[in-house]
Image 1: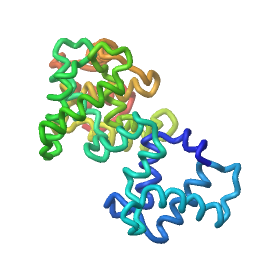
Image 2 (image 1 turned 180 degrees about the horizontal axis):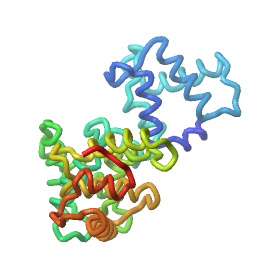
Image 3 (image 1 turned 135 degrees about the vertical axis):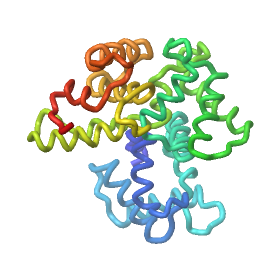
Length: 272
């Protein structure tokens, strides 16, 4: 069973945990514990029969190791420390601290700090990036905590130790794997379905509600669109593809993509 935990990453762990920690207080207790360990055993060790005895044995082993106060509760961080490797453990903690699922918001801050469009930001820029991220979410984080987050991120994710993180590193840290466009299959539905989906897509990326995509909104759309076919897009690639999209869709050459312009690009008929 323990070997089966090797298959688990931060996103998978958090998905399971949130199912049982419905009130998001950071711990589970009572019958929730039995249900939690039964679920873990079934999901991660399907070749083993999840008997009541095995569930209780697994539960007892974890609780004896981590329920220090003997209050019958299991904290999320306690379990993560034992199950997840260092990088996934950090991702779990950080994503609970700073949940972010909007590519537009992400790209807005990224553009600010990747000023030279190199596709990388330094440790110093990362610290400022994180400060902006928390402020955007109306959260105050102490400067020493920001330093701790920055140092940990660089230590874990700066694989080649050049003192920089790239666009994909940061997207992974901030849990941007959830591509909004994955919800839609615009080639496989009726005209009405396509029109309805287009409206949802445009509204999602038109964060400023101006009726046109511009700046970080275009970046977010391009990043998600290309993520469907090229998961690891680099900063320079993003800039090239952004230019291509604007050249193709920005009919009136105002540097924005109007709603009707994007509809034309995607082959969707909308009412004007």
